[in-house]
Length: 336
Image 1 (tube, helix red, strand yellow):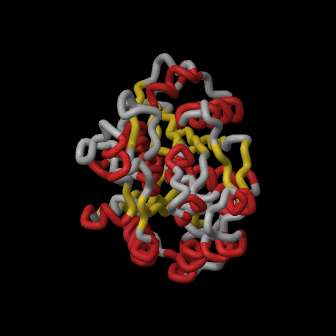
Image 2 (cartoon, rainbow, N blue to C red):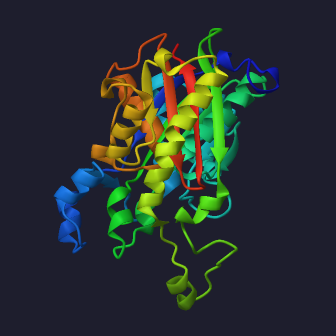
């Protein structure tokens, strides 16, 4: 049983899809731009070979809408059947309205409510937990959850670390009722706001609003990250998220068949699997081709794992996210 007695194990992911922009930016392309880095450094330190970059006129909602359309085509879902759209993003089209409202209009989901969840790299796990509650309590039958990000819009050539890490993309999943004892078994969500400025965007909010060029120079609308602090945080967040989420489902790590991590850094994923005591065969990495797509990374990796046949019916699948906030969390499902 889940929170408030809701039968979460009757709510599952019944469809997945993802979309990435056409434009490919390789490590060599980045070096050619004059960034002080190298292809070898990026591959060795982060595990990225290339990333996708949205066009100038392509917004986050455009990426999300394309992912949604691909999902609808795969599942036969019609726009009118969608009752709620949740978009997890840290790169919204506008401060208001929500990016989900733009997506609703673009895919013709005229019967759907729409809202955003802003929780960075753990956003998809938060969104999944929220979406499942709406289905579990009978409020909605079909909820569309999309992780969508366009961090290239906020790149800073003077910060080689963040410039090379991120990529644009969107991943969509459909949540609805499934057979009993399948689907979502448990969730676990946590945060530690004392580490907020370890990974954040200084300008553009109410703390540092931007009204002139001087404001923008002092408080840029660009990501700022303490790489070592994030690494140390991830090494603690991964085992905590896994252990507590599995405990909530009366499972242990030995029961897990497959793990889908937020694609922050390939070395973090490799180290995370070691900490969990699992072989790399039980996870997937897509960071090589798509880089860190923030809240889109888990649904993108999940769809790829499914299409590659790595996840089968009855498998216990653990989704682990961690990032800005600092926030982290996990969801565990028995695949239907």
